[in-house]
Image 1 (cartoon, rainbow, N blue to C red):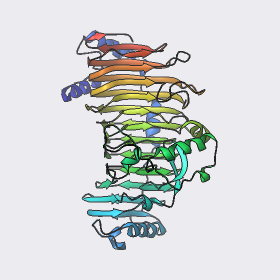
Image 2 (spheres, rainbow, N blue to C red):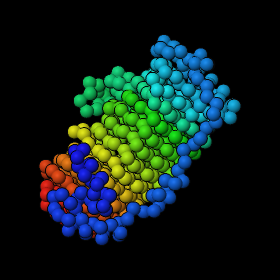
Image 3 (cartoon, one colour):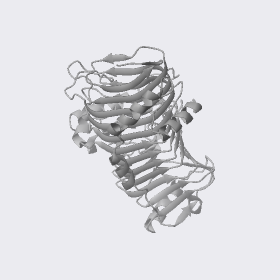
Image 4 (cartoon, one colour):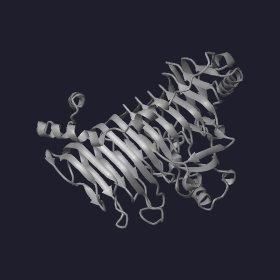
Length: 476
């Protein structure tokens, strides 16, 4: 597969896609050159990238050891970390250093102008003890707002916050802690616990949201909703850089209602239930680059709130760039949804690699007529997929099917220069009879080996050219 990547890089230098050369001839390359002007990468992507700036911090650096932190599980560093953050914040900001060693803590709440730096050789463990994550804070769980358990690393309405470094963040999720709250999951040894089960909190929460109960009143004495790992909410100028994030209770990186977000060079390694890698939710101006995702759920999922709550808040995810990332295991590589009721617009995905026997889907859009969402100007190009089950998936029937009144709207979806070595299926496209999938352009897609026929239901007016499956040009 690496040879194919190198080959496509050479072809890109001369303006040709691997879809037009290799299995066929140079006549296809000439056609690609002449057509590329009409499918040019929007200058808007470059404009978005130019205005996303990572926050900068004063030179002041203080180690958590200066405030009493000691390595070892028996040494709770929670108060020391809290004191270090307060001290540096009171001085105008700077870096709170977690030095080499294994430290243990409860939730960490960032203040404005704070960079939490996990040094190389450092492991910051989070105790998997739910009572530590109280008192409740304002949070979102699967796109619905509530007062819930604190995220492991949390920032609320702050400016200039960061989590950086070459160290490891260890979330403590396992078959004995946090993950069993999921309930029945795959072939896991746990089942549906009659008390400690997220459905007993999730279901009434969603009912509250549908009934427009104020968020401050969405409080549960027994809350079994697993907290996300890193969740800044309503923050400006956010940076997540370099760290390795492991064994999260729930979603790993979940900025919510944030603006100017940079996620770069992180390594997400978590195989538990709902271990999404990076889920920007109702955020504006987001750059995700040079990251590795190896997860138990979606690698990257763009979200904007669920159902009535997403429509109440009414904020889309917009102006998002994803580039030079690697996706391994996961339910999907780059995903839109499923909590997408606020819509998404202006997404650009470029030069990413995906491959794993455990990668279920490459490019995926999932929604339904309860969740709805206006999905506009979504662009994907130069994507190399080694092994995947379903390469391109658009599904209007996700989970609830077609029982609502908020029909999804797709507009200006473009996929160009996609190379897939081996897929079970090239396409799974399922629209509604009353609202077929439209607004999609497919160009220069090569599927070297495909095992099964595509699933195509209620698709209309798809623009397509240069689609090769098992060595033959096809129309879907």
